View (cartoon, helix red, strand yellow):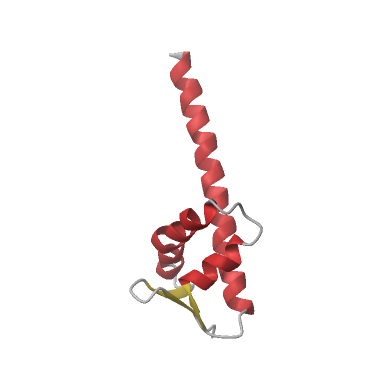
Length: 95
């Protein structure tokens, strides 16, 4: 029984790390869009900007996570527009 508690705690700690990673990534995406001179950015360009200084093996994993998780979440919160077919991201104009 104690072993299950240990496993749950370990999983919870892992989940916290993943949530922190996602939050950091979402903030970084919004900052990049805010400071970008163009209103539209490709998924690849965004992934490359976010990947700077990261291990080379992480690029594809991060790009896939942007496409399937991060950008759709930000789009559903009306913080940006993401066209999954054309892989383009457009910042939302603030009123």
